[in-house]
Amino acid sequence: MATVITINQPEVIALIEQAAKQLTDGDTTEAVAQAIRGLLARNERKGSLFGRNPGSAIERAGVDLTAPMVDLEMDAETGRELEH
Image (cartoon, rainbow, N blue to C red; front, top):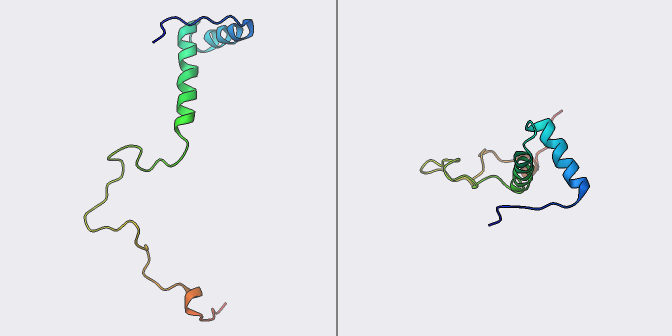
């Protein structure tokens, strides 16, 4: 694992220094770390969140999560006319 990273592009160095002054009182290492954490967090949120954190959703015994929530027959399936 790298312990030192060298950046030679002046525009990137200027961005890091500007961010460090505004966000971390001049700490360039922390400014880079915050940027990387932000990129990782943004990338992590793609897709469904269900099942990502074990124990975050608890299913009680006897509950079928795939069963319909309402046991009523839908009006469209009955063929009955609706009164408005």
